Length: 206
Image (cartoon, rainbow, N blue to C red; front, side):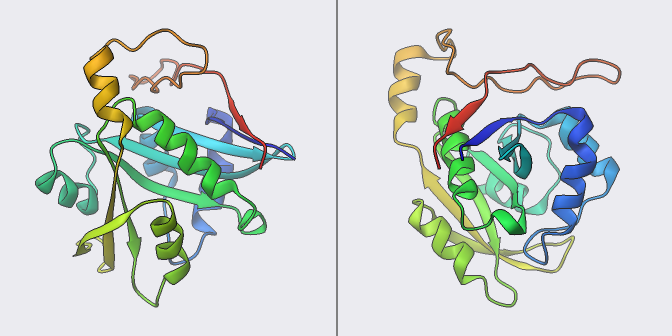
C-alpha cells in the first residue's frame, strides 16, 4: 500500500504525542504544550499515513527560527543556513517498511528549494548504529558531537549538503513558481487563527 505524507491536522496532535512518547530513548519525550508549540510555529510538521492509519511524523525548522533546542543552537553557531530536522518518529509496527525514507525524501524535496543543507542529530547513548547507518545511507555525515544541556545525552551532529539549492536560488531567488506539486511552508500563527495552509499531499509507492 502507498505511503501518503501530508501536513499534520490539529485533531491528530494527541495521536502524535502518543507516538512520540512511545518511541523509546532515541527520541526525547514531549508534553502537550511543547507539541502545541511545534504545531503553531514549525515550518514543516507532517505525518505519514499508511493503510489509512498514522504511521509517523517529522518536524522540521529553518535556521532563522527561535527554536530553543541546544542541538539546534549548536548548528546555528557554526552554520549560517540550514533546515533542521528536530525529530522523526515512525510507529514501531511500521519500522523497516519505507516510512522513514518517504519522510526524508519529502523533507529533502521541501528543504532543497530553500536551504543549502539538512541538519539533524542521532543520540549515541547505548549505541544507535541502525540510525547512524540509515542517515549515512541517505547522505548525512557527522560534523561534530554535542552533549545536550537539557538531557545530558551525547549526540552525533549530522549534515547533508543539498546540491539543488544553488541552482534553485540562482534561478528563482525567493520567488518560487506556483506549481501544484510544490510543498508550501506551514504558516506560523497567532492564537485563534488557522494553523496552516493545506498543501497537496505527497504519495510514494513504498
